[in-house]
Length: 256
Image (cartoon, rainbow, N blue to C red; front, side, top):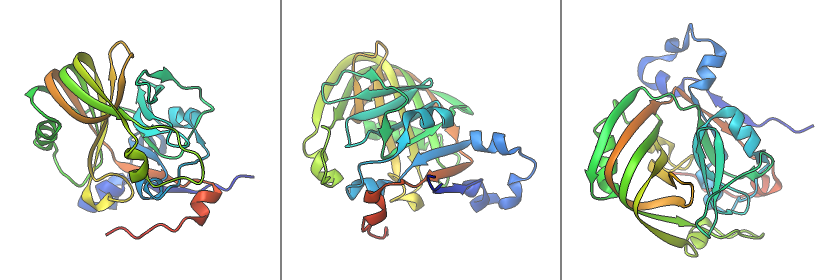
């Protein structure tokens, strides 16, 4: 029988600011729906743990919105409206079957609490600064979605790797870059606080899909024309450790 290796941090982020008593009165199901469900850690993926046992079907059970990758770092993952897409090095997205496995991903049931119009933002840095202005606190995890028109999106994907797996930096050096001009689509991403560095990427991490689902990838830069931006604040983080020999035997450095 597979050993369950899950760390549940229910209302962790809330408790850091307002005390654990704020979890009282909420049903277990309601709390879980407000959590981000994450498979493995960025530190493990960066260190070459690129095979996992969690299926995309499990991701769909735990969220309808998210990002990640696939075993062997086989392209970029976008989870949008409950559908898991893979953007391989061809740049053409495809729908993934539930049995496909992931070594690293994060999903949430997207239920935004705040909407804003994001327009005339000339770069990804400008977009990040705009989202920063909307965050009530930088101590929570937020899911971020933008729907609309983009004058430019610079995206990438990476090729599938074979064991023994290299580091993430070595794989990114082989990335394929796509320059998408005058597109309509959706950016899917998350903001993680600095204190969760190593668990995930501190700050913002976005993936993209065009509205016609013909292009996408990990966002390297963008120019926003006119979009509707939605924010969803998570109440906690549920972290699933990989049940794999690679993870069990990996030497993972401590994060600062």
